[in-house]
Image (cartoon, rainbow, N blue to C red; front, side, top):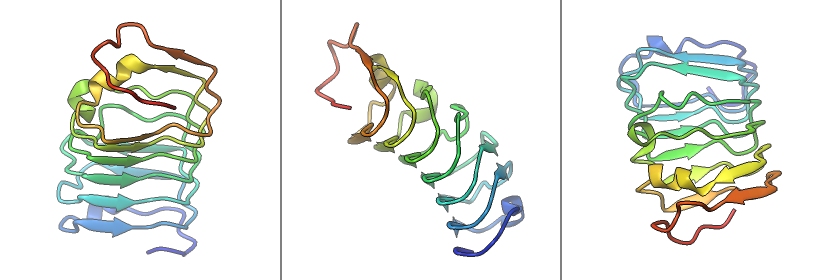
Length: 153
């Protein structure tokens, strides 16, 4: 479904699909309430401002890069190992252990991030690749991060 002019799509109707890509469209909103089989979802290069998903989601890879997201619901994707949210309008990233403990790759480059508290890395125990470049970061809080390895924004 890539490279079309889609403005709306009902992904929930694709009940047995494990890989779906609707990149380079005009999507503004996506709802993933009952996509229990979907593991790889590419919605990059759209006009997304929000995404709603159910907590039974089995997504392993989610590409939301190059959209207009200003926030991301942190309780939506408990099984993710790759989250690509670069080139959006995100001003903060809220991460909680139970929802991001499997994430190995997080790309949040080219957003509007101004402040990073490195404590959030404790909620990413599996992280192998973290990209925060080309944001507006002016402050990095390193308090209570003695157990964290070396990371750079």
